[in-house]
Amino acid sequence: MDFQLDEDRRMLADALGRYLSEQYSTEYRNKAAYGAQGFSAETYAKLAELGAIGALFKEADGGFGGDGVDISVVFEALGTHLVAEPLLGALLVGRALTEAGSDAQKAQLEGIIGGETIAALAHDEPANHYELNRVATTAQAEGDGWVLNGSKAVVLFGDQAQLLLVSARTAGAVGDEAGISLFLVPGDAAGISSRGYGRIDGGHAAELVLANVKVDADALLGKLGEGHALLERISGFGLLALAAESLGAMDVAKNHTLEYLRTRKQFGVPIGSFQALQHRMADLLLEAEQARSAVINAAAAIDNPDYVEREKALSAAKYSVGQIGTLMAEEAIQMHGGIGVTWELPLAHYAKRIIMIDHQLGDMDHHLARYMALQARERAAAKAV
Image (tube, rainbow, N blue to C red; front, side, top):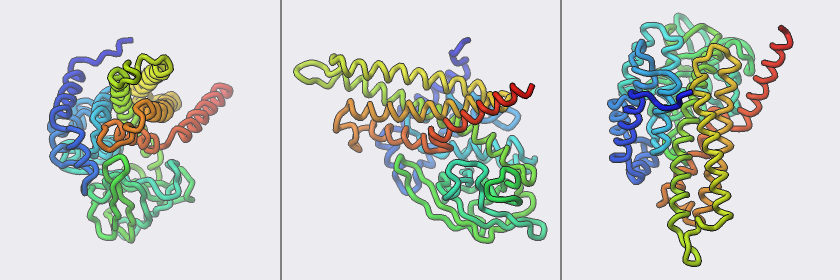
């Protein structure tokens, strides 16, 4: 199998890498990522202009890519440079529109792809612990529309988004898969209150409270009560994106550590000449390649019609980058010594981002359990044949 990128993807990766290397220094990034907004609007517009957002969508939807390799190329570049801008929200909400949106709803894709509309998925709640089916927010029919009530937690850029994709229960109990519906809600809709805050790894998130938020009937995205399957589908794109982003960040942490081992001296020799550190670094290099293989496998599987095979590959990738990323961050900091945790050293910020990626869309424990459940489902189906 040929794992080399084709010419178009190489050009995209090169363009993103060149722009971010020249214009997105660590100092610039940290000022934006830890600032009041959590990102740079100027950088986000430029990334859209370079095609970083358009590459996440198929040509029929106004983009020029949209398959797993395109998504992984873009997000690996973002991870390499610790980009804090809200591309994950663009991917999740945009793919929900392409998968289930009406023609009128899909018209909002133009603003997302152009970088003019900040979009955010408002699904997580204080007690759902990564489970897509645990939705307590409610949507009740009223007249020719809906009224939404509930709370959403850790909504990325939720206090700045112009477009929110909100999960709400229209039937059933809190833990049921059936009865979940998705609604497109303007970020400034009456009844939404938000508390924004900076994240430890840079960027912004918000807690949202929806109190009698009224939306029209055409705010419903997809079929009534069947939002769980759509949530799972778009979460799959998010898992691939986060795994690729972690991979990019791990590569930088690995390279910075190798360079430090070559240049830091003790007893008149580089510490990289010490056998114990060589063994630890060799283990990290092997683990990093294992993570890369898992991401490549997930990218190849993202459009696999076989549900179990697809979801196993995605959970395996997310588990792998969680487990290997944690090891990479810890070992890189330890081999740097005390300097590894200082604000001035880029490594500290890479380590924080790598660790926090593990907690987005399900941590390694969650995805290990999910993988095992999918395997059990596969074995049961095989026995039934």
